[in-house]
Length: 184
Image (cartoon, rainbow, N blue to C red; front, side, top):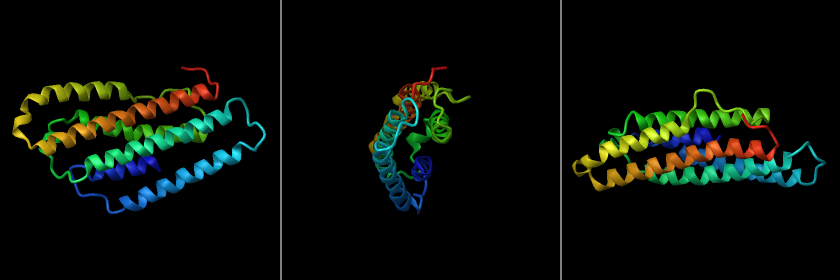
């Protein structure tokens, strides 16, 4: 659900806002509330194995953190239409967004299988972040050609994309540790 919300937010970045964005936001909030109820109910259940309560707690915590980061991204992307400055950050900006989408799907698969220790194949969020930062450094001297609003919006969006990427990675790694899996 968080991945779908992410995709809807990015649909509005440099394009028309997704019409279902408010409904998706409410759906995600409903899922987060349900997760909290599940976590509360799990505290009264007999042990489901080593670290399962800690794992549920981690997933719930990261879900809330990712939602907060997505709300910040939503505000950052608001009112962006054909931002030429952000276009200058391609292909690095787009690559990070694509890999974040894949990261959301991978974390959902990990949660479904309750296996978090295997790194996602072909997904290198840290490299994507480094490439975006390098591209931003290249584009920075051309900033005088763009409006201040475009520049600030692009910086805010990339900042939130980097935060989301880091949260996705941390959610898998930290949950793996909480449930006692060996790291690969």
